[in-house]
Picture (cartoon, rainbow over the protein chains, first blue to last red):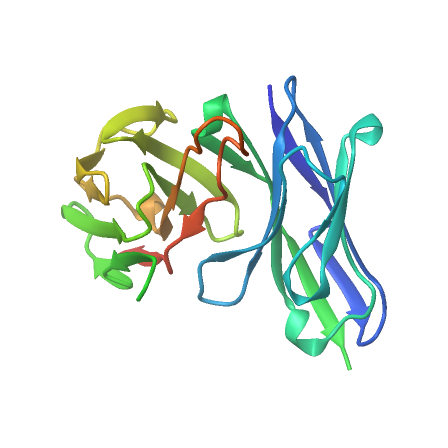
Amino acid sequence: AQSVTQLGSHVSVSEGALVLLRCNYSSSVPPYLFWYVQYPNQGLQLLLKYTSAATLVKGINGFEAEFKKSETSFHLTKPSAHMSDAAEYFCAVTYTGGFKTIFGAGTRLFVKA
Amino acid sequence: DTAVSQTPKYLVTQMGNDKSIKCEQNLGHDTMYWYKQDSKKFLKIMFSYNNKELIINETVPNRFSPKSPDKAHLNLHINSLELGDSAVYFCASSHMSPTGGPRYTEAFFGQGTRLTVV
């Protein structure tokens, strides 16, 4: 069965430090993978997506993620954290012909001044 | 213009009542969803509709009845509300691409409806 695991429900970094949010997936077919961000009291906004093209995907706000098939991972990174990056981040995988997207449990990112 | 809009944004109601949440998308997408987000932020798909047809029903109690009058709308009606139904409900939409490109677009989400059952 397809699933998504996000390691760490909370991640805290200092402003200017590297952000690394981990995501591993299981899928019996090539997946479509996504990272979404959710700010308080808002809906989810797409950060970036992997759709079997380039394995290194660049998204909005300076985020990027690398698809590693051998590790079944799709970790999200940003070289330098900003206070405005504090939010909930969700990794997701789409399958079942595109009609079902499974979300990870989310990682809350805290950014310290 | 809001791409995926839900109404109402907040809904407070008593146990046993029946309520509806409406969702509309103006993106021309052919697939719409309802998700439930619990107090721990966990997102779980409830229903998926493609071209007005129910595709996914994730063992949701039959007190929850989605209705899609057309491709741009997917409403959620909930009967006999229970305390455990309190959550944020998100509507989303996406599109199946023609062959030759990525098959599916990402899902676009509404702002959510915070349902509180008292």
